[in-house]
Image (cartoon, rainbow, N blue to C red; front, side, top):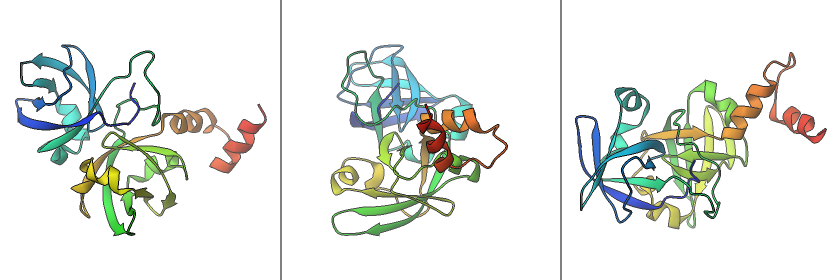
Length: 203
């Protein structure tokens, strides 16, 4: 389990034979789980200067591999007693999103990100979403996607500074949105989030 709060930007030293080797201030142990651009991976090798995680061919098909170079986001798995911020992140990437537009508003920047239609059902206004491992709030749901408003601090300290129109990103939708939708999808009436709110208010 993760929180979507990036520990640091790690430097990619190499990606060969399915092994991604990183250099970071954080020093994991063999077998540790670590989210790299939002994907939960296992540490399989350690040196004095680096550590390596393995990406299966299946993972490489799902992930936005174009972002696994230069620098990547890393977050170690939560430990019991850690301060909980962000939101509950599993490190299981659902799909790829595409940056559709970027608009600078002076003290913030709006990013509109599109995603496959089948995952839009889990996108909720003012709900949570994880972009390349970063926990963010959805400001608005738009046609085929959603709008994020990112402050300068987040842009400067994450991969958001590198994104351009057309960039692909790893998306993990909110775990609770997925669970609630699955619980009530058998309802014969069309399920909307307003109806979910009404149902939940009865309990």
